Length: 470
Ligand code: TRP
Ligand code: ZN
Image (cartoon, rainbow, N blue to C red; front, side, top):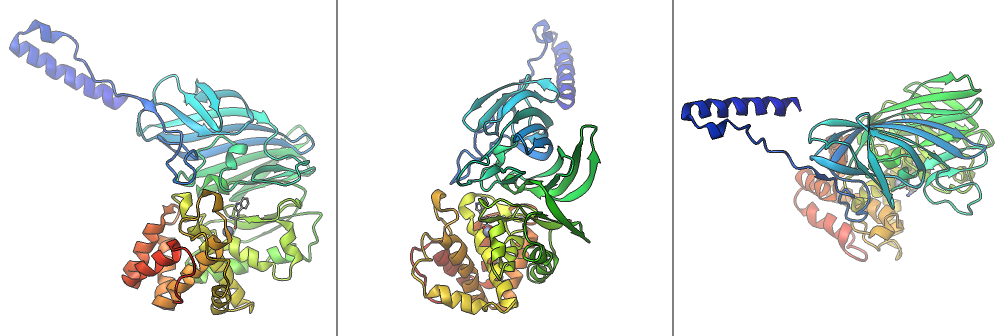
């Protein structure tokens, strides 16, 4: 307002002077200052696979989430404050939000109109939001989010069990439990204040600032993740957990019903695995570290939630359980620090994480990189769909993981070890805390590894069927 106000005054004075000189009374009329036009923000960020995910017209800087959760009833009460900057003159804008009930919503402290259309929460502030200006959205909401304890299977989102809950949100589950610009293209910092019954642990991403007893036989757990984080990597895990802490803001939480010798002992190797990976990929990007193992048999997968992956407890029935840690911890560089600009490029997450996993396997005597490559090269079922464009329904197809990792190994066999690891480190370093695309990766690999690499990567990423042996 101030900048435009001053320009308006200057313009008025200039016209007044001109009018006096010309002696033309008609020109003494107040000048018409052009009003900027305000238009709605787009209902999607423009992702090729998930066109509705995220929204346009603004950039979120911070999510402040104050949550109260009652494991007994499954009731979540949320109070969120979003700080964002408009990237166009906005007449209205969308957030992505599921089916929890909103009780109050303000923009810049003033009541705003809002409505729901599917996953879109459409917000019309009382005045237009000017491009480049910071604004805040304050939302209060409540209800029982996501998948309840009686569901036979779990999908993604906020998963409630009888004794707690855990949020695992890839690719668009975050909107299950907080209003969000739900796309990794809009990363933001987070603070969490989670109030739970006394004796219950509430874990989130980043650094634990402290816990505080409320008057009501409850405890509030405060966490902050200062590094930019994609929405699907935000998590909360609530329940009865055993906790291991250590240097570097290490915080590991294992559900107290799981066997310590099988689970806690494996999780305790997190810093060692990170150190091994940092030797290849460059410094660990975040200022805290850990892991979460909920007692939820329906979670049969793991997710690279930033700083603190969530692991399904069934992984720890196996002998080589550290392999899944290596996968999720590799994602901290590839997926979390360097995030997807577009979901079509999912191999930049899963191919790289599988590669790191195989490197750890080699390091621990569970088969060399070459062995992994040759074993899969002999198979017929790991080739399609090509990992560079698997299609929206096959984001997590085995070929994205396996052929994605083999793509990197084919690159390594072509350019040699020194250049290969220079490329990986340059990728992690050049896109740290941001996003990257496959074409940016191919450009980087061709710059450092020579022009022939371009054809090799295009074939490995985009051609159907088995590529020629490198
Ligand atoms: N990205 C996960 C991995 O490490 C797999 C995954 C895909 C996932 N979608 C998910 C995990 C949803 C939990 C929830 O391979
Ligand atoms: Zn993965």
